[in-house]
Picture 1 (tube, rainbow, N blue to C red):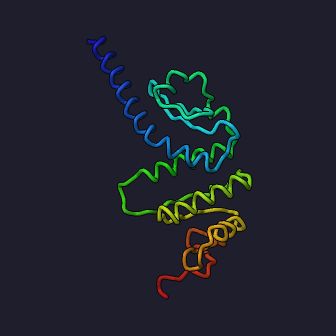
Picture 2 (cartoon, rainbow, N blue to C red):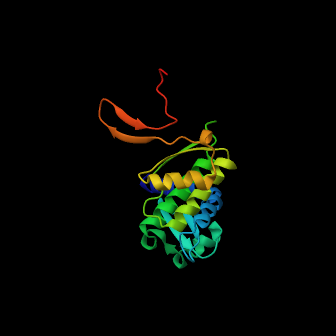
Picture 3 (spheres, rainbow, N blue to C red):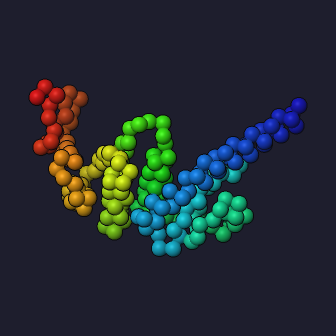
Length: 193
């Protein structure tokens, strides 16, 4: 009985890993497109996500590999967590987040909320990220809500995307307490108005 239980657990783990790898494989094209578009690394431009024995591996390579080939060459790939800087890790996380968001069809809402995506990014990567966001807005017809502490960068985003005043809202939170939030915005209106 004990042996059967061990075999069942092993089988379950293999099936689970296989299903997750199929799902991740379907996302890898989109993840890599975002990752390369923002261009955070000079030569490791391909991210490969895979599970093995219920562990998730985030590995980088200089070429795109199919899962079967990748599995055989896992030792030739680079562990992303040991290689990427803080900014590159954020770009990788954003690439995965955007790919997951793009693949989800469970809601008719086309809204993406992002909290301070520009932290630790240099100007080139930040400008590239603005281009990614612009494509999501203009091509994929997504509404994007970005929270950032950098008001200059928020204004640059609006200018770079060439948005008309009626296409965006800029809301600045001056201060907040448990009782109220003080907001500054030309577009913001109280519900009673």
